[in-house]
Each structure stands twice: as C-alpha cells, then as structure tokens.
Length: 428
Image 1 (cartoon, rainbow, N blue to C red):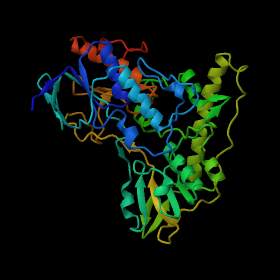
Image 2: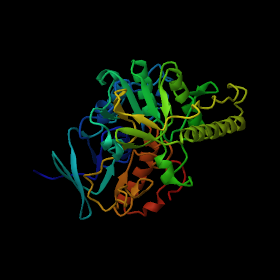
Image 3: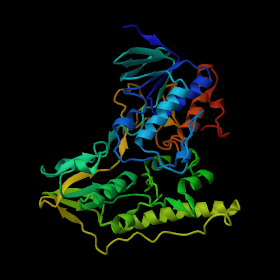
Image 4: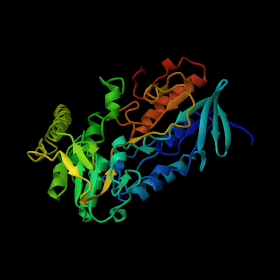
C-alpha cells in the first residue's frame, strides 16, 4: 500500500482535533485528521444516554464557529452535541479520514511515520488529539468483588434499564458519579454512593450560571504555568455539576434528599465485605471549603467590576450533611447490593504511541502540550493542558491556536520559543 504524505497528521476527530484542523487551515498548513470512527466518535459510542454537557450552550466556542440556536443557556444532549461537531467539521471542511485506526506512531528521519488500518502516513509534525477519556479507570480492588455482583464502569453504563433489580453502589462522587446516583435512585434502585475527593459547586450563583462567573472572572483562563502544582491541578475531579432544564444543583445534599446513602471512599474488600475510609466527613468539609474559596474569588471579582448592584447578593449552600458515624463496611454477599458502578474517572490510551515521551508513570512528558524529546509532536484536549478550561469545548480553541503557532514556527525553522501565544503571554 502506498505511503501518503502530508505536513501534519492530527490524530482524533473530536472537538480538539477539529479545532486544530481549523487553526492549521488558517495557516495554510497541509494536514489530515485521522479518526478511528466518525467525527465525535466518543460522544457517539462511549457516553450514557441521558448525558448533557456541563457547560451552557453559549460556551461551545470553537475556532471559527459557535452556538447558533435559540437556547444559549441550555445544556446540549448527546445527539445535539454530535450534530454540533458534525456541522463544525462540515463548515471548516476538515480533511477527516474516518474509520482510520492509528496503530503506531514512530519517528521517521525528519518526521513521523503513522501506521493505520488504512495505510501509512509520513509527516513532519503530529498532533495527538485522541482525548483524555479513552479508558475507564477502575481500581484493582474491583477484582475482589464477589462473583454474584454485576459490575459496570462509566463507559459501559447507559441507563437504569440495563441494571439488575436491587441495590446499586456507585463508586465516585464527581460529576459522573452524582449523575449516575441521581438517575438510578429515581428509577427505583436503592443507591449507595462511595465518596472520595470531590468539588462541590452550585449550578447557579448570584442569579447566573457558575460557568458564566468562571468565564467572566478569568478562572477558566488560568494558565498551566501560573499554578503552584500543575500535576495536582491536572488530577482534580470535575465539579459536581449537571445540565438540566431547571438548572438544578446536584450535590451530596440533593442526593441525600432523595434517599441516596453516603459512605466513604472505597478502601478494600475482605471476604466479601467492602471496607470504606473513615474520612467521609473530612472529605465533605474539604469540598465545602474549596467551593467557598471559588465563590469568594467570584464575589471579589464581582465587587471589583461593579456588578454587586446588578446580581443577587452573595450566598452559600448549607454544609454537606453527613451522618455522625458513617458505616465503614458493607456486606456484599447478603444480596442488598446487586450492581457496582465504577465512576472513578478515565485515562487516555496511548498504547499505539512508540515515542520516547513517557515518564515512569506512563504519562506523556510535555510543556503545555509541546512534547519533550519529540520535536514537532504536540498534545491537545486533555485536562489543564495550557489552561484550566483545556478539556472543555470552550477551551480547546485557545490551546489549538497556541500550539498551531508553535507548530508553524517549528516548520519555518524558527526558534519555537519565540512564538506568540493568543493570550499574549510568552510560553514557558
């Protein structure tokens, strides 16, 4: 099979890959976008049925394109999200090669050789935009669950109808876990949620969507080289938000109000008995403190910008309610729990990447998306890549502009350290 050539290969046809495609086209850089399925494949095939975006529709801003409907404050469902990205790919004439699975990326002289199920590509530069949520993270202790317990991870769960009758334990209390618990409890299954680190947040604050405040106050634009501990920042769980027509707040208090039981972090299994950390009260108190700090930042910005007279007065949610002595164990053999759902996060899949760019923990070494030890290779679309909003639809555009500028400088033989980023801040 003939090896095809192009200047840049973009791997992944989701929002990150498409945003980069637009930025490369604006710079007249020849490229191709390789997608294992169709555009927005992860949204099509790896999400649960009722999922809606956590960000309001107006916040879907991609390079050269944005929301065009009549419900800017609503939250797009999955069919609408897929249609939005399909339309974006069409509008920007993205050169997508669909159903093309990348099986290897290697160095090849002055550039890279990309091996796929549809033939090989040679290129001078490559952009890894395959996403951060390719594989569900499931702790090793899951292997000790009794055989009679059904298990699902966050990529396998679709709706309550697929669950066996009886109780359900959801492990994880970030946005995914709280949404699972709410939906499954309302469907008639008694739910217990195992709570570890999480970040509580109101959907609406002082009369406006929390995302509006974070956008306006510059919280989402905080750069990776401005935080004290970027490794820690990239591991933070997602805010406990949900997208509903009523713009409701979905936190542990809301779950408790409908009968969901709270237990601590899942710590182990011994002879069919689940063991939980005794830190539940502390975890919830820390989450309340984090929420308070975020809202303090918003209040300070509102005052400095003269908004206090235009919006509601500052307020705080009631502290998270936790029973005095939460249970530290649960018998998984007595038939009360029929299903365990692991809502414990995701990780990327780079099993096809044959470049010397990984650290000892298997993470890609990079400086704001610029890969170390692989000149001309870039990363895009992961948590806090260059900005706090990097993993959002609204965040990949700014990152793509920055990295495409660096890529263009590299191709032109310039010192990439001299490239100008869109925010006006020099790269680290």
